Length: 112
Length: 114
Image (cartoon, rainbow over all chains, first blue to last red; front, side, top):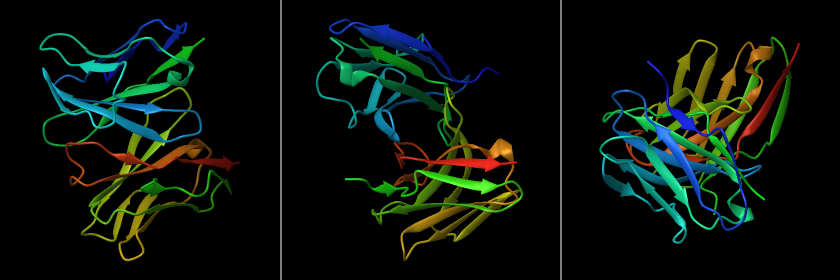
């Protein structure tokens, strides 16, 4: 039973480009969470999704960031027109309906 | 406004001794607390948790203590081993630890020296 799979592990984008981060939850997990870790900081909640629904996006920046978890396929975190301040590690976690997070290994985004 | 604070960025301990990692919180609505361990270039892994109805939870070498009146929790690792060297994050939930977001502290880097 594979864990939470995130890809790519490393992503380099130039300022103004788009970044797409993918997360495949563990088998049987229907809830996905995205967190961002800036250098020397803890993890900050961004968004909580279930299949085809955004449950809580209170941590998402209002502009340029969007997330989806379609009926089929991985969850996608999309950052449009990236800026240097978007450079961070982005972690996805998944859980079953009742309890318990499992984190993926993260995507390290570098904006140059 | 940090709701979960880990005031020690780093801690160094000798192998075999006790490691004590501390965490303070400000929001009295938090009712479930978790500790995660993180190695470089990996995601956090769950270590141990405690509900606000308890004051202690133990799992092998790891014990978490909760002092609700002081809004303080601590993680004790005894005996410490070199493989415990990692960054430890304290996290809090207002949802009983089930669905919803977790609030993380900034982490404490533990180094266990042989």
